[in-house]
Structures are given as C-alpha cells and as structure tokens.
Length: 203
Image 1 (cartoon, rainbow, N blue to C red):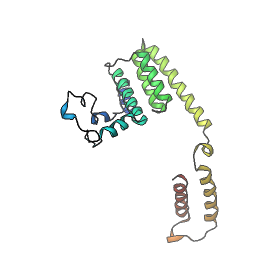
Image 2 (cartoon, rainbow, N blue to C red):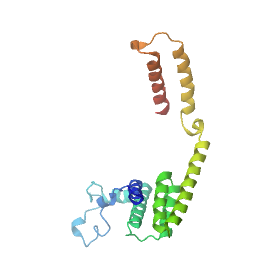
Image 3 (tube, rainbow, N blue to C red):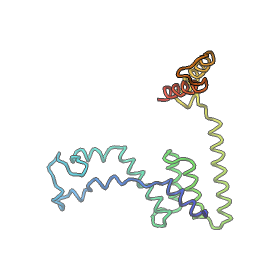
Image 4 (cartoon, rainbow, N blue to C red):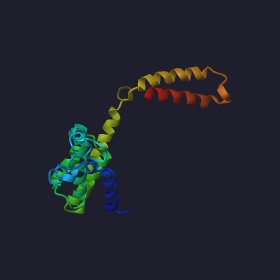
C-alpha cells in the first residue's frame, strides 16, 4: 500500500462519517408560510421524532447540540479540503486541525496523520515533505515520551491507589491459604480475587 493510500485510510478513520442529525429537523423554510403542509398548531408534533415546535427549538438551542453541529461541520470542512472540494485555505485547514486536537476531539496520532497528509499536499518537493514530516513525527514522539514520564496512575487514575492497597491485602491473604474453593489452584483463585477487586475499584 503506497503512502497516499495509507494516509487516505487514516484520514477516513480519523474524521469518521458523522451522522447528519439535522436531516430529521425541519428547516425554517420548511416551517414557513410557503409550506402550509408543514404548519401545525403550537405544541403539536412537527418532525419524524415526534417533537413539538417548542421541544424542537429547545433541542436545537442546547449547547451540546450546537457543539455537535459544529463538530460535524468541522469534519466536513476537512473532508472537503482533502478531497479538493472545500473552501478552506491551506492555512485555515492546518489551524482547524490544531484546534480540534487542542480541544481533545481527536487523538494525537490522528492529528499527526492529518498533518502528514496536509504536508504531503502542501510541500513543494519530496525532500521538503520528508524533512517536515520527520520533524513532525519527532515532535509527537517527544510529546508522547514526556506524557509517559509525567503519568502517575496514583494521581491520574481514580480508584488506582485504593485498588493497590486491596491488591496487596489479597495477595497476603492468599499466600497464607492452603486450600481453595472448588478445588481450583492458588494462581486461579488469586486471579479471580484480583479481578473482582479491579472491577469494584473501577466501576
């Protein structure tokens, strides 16, 4: 598989195919006087989901719905850019990738893949692309290494400290046992006890 095909596959996975929720919602034009078939008394159902005019308005104005619409718009904008059918400039598309990444809407490796695709489109030569791509990959490698070094499960993972205390207690208890339920081995009994403790700690 060549580099362009490989990058295209990653782009498709990174961007995804957003669900066009708004297709279920009538537009203002559909509810205007020019469309009497769509008119209904206030409070009555106007859309396939069975929502009233008031419910529909409340739903569409919900910040979570607005954020969803914006995310879908951003996805389509980037898809269009990489398909040569959008209105974003090269600089705007790069800034959009940066923005989406900084907001945590895509993983680091997904952002890196999109940026590599951007570099492939906008580099003047293969040599320029290779240099820029190498620097980009190295910057993400350093970020990943720094994150790993700073990661502390005792602080970053809720329930981890409690689980480790329980784990030590279970190990001590099992080590002192000579018989085990259902005739299972010590290792299997220990495994089950620890699994139960993990599920309880992280539920």
